[in-house]
Length: 223
Image (cartoon, rainbow, N blue to C red; front, side, top):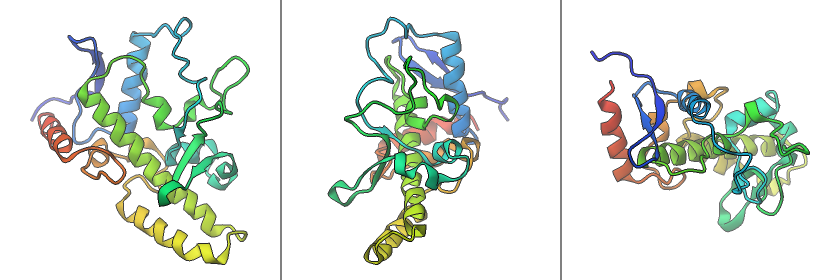
């Protein structure tokens, strides 16, 4: 038995943000805590940075846990404030559309939902990242966004204003999502294991089989 390994971030020899201590028991919350600890120890010069991370015009993936926290368990309350893209028969749910600034910023550009912000905001780092970090970021954000689609459809199906013709296809899509999601109906990030997010499912996680196999070998070292 190896000793308990704590998930943490550090700067490697290539000056990339790397990840250490990822085990089969590591949760998404562990990853987010490690990111916060990293920034506490390695503060970025945000005041002088010109990347405009939060104030730019882009789409921010909404995630199911964040939606539950922001809405205090009443997701239907924030659904009207989300940007939904149905392009190419694919349902996507975003916190903000690509042509608008985030509505959750105050006049000073500070986030009003910082403690409940979605995974795509939590995992974003504006400096170079290692391969492991990129895999975790892509898998976690995608899985939580995947679950958000089902949360959105739950509201659509419960809404009396939804056209009758839309009920059956919405229900079928919801069932398809729920059957493959491990984050659906979770209240906290601590309930979701990282290893379950990192899986070879190009339909929504964009993590290749080779990357998933490499990650599995990595966590096996920390069992």
